[in-house]
Length: 581
Image 1 (tube, rainbow, N blue to C red):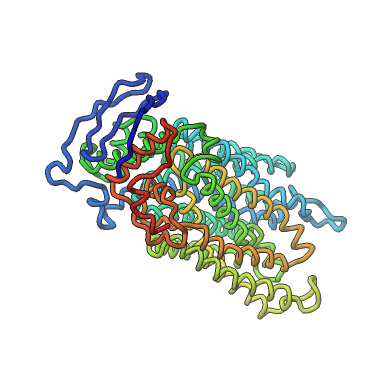
Image 2: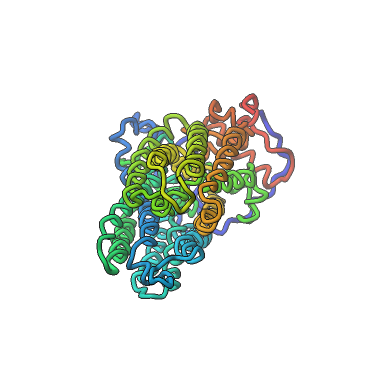
């Protein structure tokens, strides 16, 4: 469908013009533009030269072909281990004798205890720091690259560890240290999934993003095991050894980022085409001059050109940008909020306290939950790309709501024989452990990684970092509220708190069905096009993305609309699939 053009004003000059790419012949044509940014003079290769495959998807067929990039993404995902290890250790710290002697309040009978306020602050303030870090630090990833942003976060993390391990008897000093480490972990929660999603092939992108969650669960499990071993000490080694181990995790990630290739989408957006070629080549074990590398860069540039045609301030774009940027921001916030409101951290932050109240060996029960959490995340890695994001979330919400209801009913009605401070029924205690295991199994295999996968794929590159930061900010805010107020609420109403999480899980089922679109098997640029076409979420699984030629045509029409401000944004790729909407 042709579109008449009467007059087109010159597009506003960009501060750093990127080389223009042809999506039809893989060549890169450098133009002079603004010389402040290096302009690459790349050789021109004929399309499909020598009969070689035209795209990376053609050359990456078996698991061995994906192995190099999978290893790189797992290195990035190790940032999740740093977060998980903290989660797995802090719930044990508050029940350790030396930690209590140093940082808890002393009762009249000489025993030590944590008040609800102090417990909430020591555990929950970490999430407040994460909220700050998720919103502020990722900006460094836009300025200097995802890799450098992660390295900056690790330096901040080490500073926080020094404050924690140097704490003697001032509980507020330890709390300040947790705020600082939280700032670093909050940044990792944005930058690591973002880095992975921008680097990984679309066929296994969901799997590789879920590896971030896998590392979180591994960190939680290792944290539980370390605390179980060190609890037998009678001095500060109880908690200082676990904190000291965090230095090793931080240095491992910091050093691992040094040889890491930068995100090709970041490099292309900054005009560093040669570096982008080398990054793609290194990740896929091909030559930088391979036609498939040129094809990949051309596809990325086409998406960036389409996004650039929208123009405007980035923060303004979050509310007014197209296609449906504000709606997608809302989706990210809701998904991250609902992930917390499933109640998973109710177990992880207060696991030892909950099971101790039920007269169950709390440390052993926590290790059991850690094993299940880690093991079933492997299931999540498989199902996220096998069955899709939507189906995983729907199945997860249904399963978790059933077991949360059973958990709440057993804990509130059957566990205590003669009041909340009396003896407990052993069969009910065993049932609580079983139900908790099943809940964690459903969470680990669905919402745990599925939420990260969807949010990392939702946004176009021009707003991806701030949008992910805001969405992740909501996750940490809810995490802080849950971790801080849980001790107050459980003191007042006990296991009835589970009904709140049960209600949130029921709400998540229709929300996912009617609002969340399927992104399985789509490139990040194709996800953007799906929102251009207004595909209904419950029909998105059957949506077929436009061809490369249609994407290029859509980019041209979008640019014309941006500068002429006339007509509605319609192209062949919109009318092509209107039946989907």
